[in-house]
Image 1 (cartoon, helix red, strand yellow):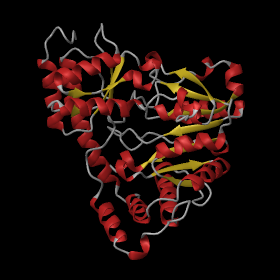
Image 2 (spheres, one colour; image 1 turned 120 degrees about the vertical axis):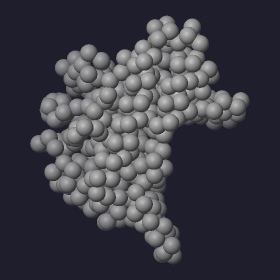
Image 3 (cartoon, helix red, strand yellow; image 1 turned 180 degrees about the vertical axis):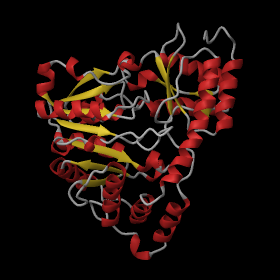
Image 4 (cartoon, one colour; image 1 turned 135 degrees about the vertical axis):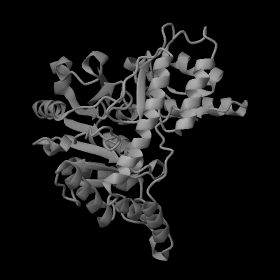
Length: 392
């Protein structure tokens, strides 16, 4: 009996699932692991969001199927957020699709717009789901490098003309995971022009747009004139409102593309739990001051980590956005080998850069989603590790 589709042969196990098993094995051996590997916010959502969830869940009529494209309050909340945050007007019914987390939408979009043999352009390093969605759809993937000498921004002119003309989809992600790089409107203008000239769908993943520091305000791709003709943007409440486990995301932009995404979704899910939708709609009314206060906590953690890593010989700078530090591994190590050594010898778990693609080799990503004392403890543990192990 055949128990695996051929397409899975092209799809490795999700790297963070594999790494999570390694962390669990270390904990089973009695190691107190400090997890700085996954982007899983440890801080709670706003109280009013939790209250809205509880209040809605107590209503007996709120436990049935909620519909396929989101309740009007959530659609309108997403649209109002884009108007307030970016000055971008969206039609809540046709240009907004609520998602069960943006990861789900990223993969399902590929199933909705890519055919076997089509080509998707994917950044390297990049979030693995961009590639995996294309693989599930039977499409081919061309990876374009994000290089440090360019600030981890794409060089669209370096993509061969033949490749660009054959491509049906391209992914961008700023503020960037894993590198924490940011892009300005000029980069998005180039990308929109590239999409128009090559008749391809431009997809922008922006879940870290509200995790930013010192007055930096990451822009939206949809601020560019003509973007909605060729683009969709993904976002999430996971990072903005600390709601990762709630699985609430959104896709916005081109209505025809969103119709294809919705057609896939209506066949594979039955919508989001109504109380979660109502609570998510409430989140969009949270004052900016709440986000600023939360970001200050991340910034304090960032300084603790950066100063500690610098004292150990790592070259790190304060990013403008995200809660990630992207840094090179010490000489003589590869990414996963170094991360494994830290896990086994210091009880500190960080993400190997190779999880994000070939261009991520030689780097590690450190996620600041643990309390500041635990981050300080992680630095101290690394400092006390035998000097011969980490030649920093």
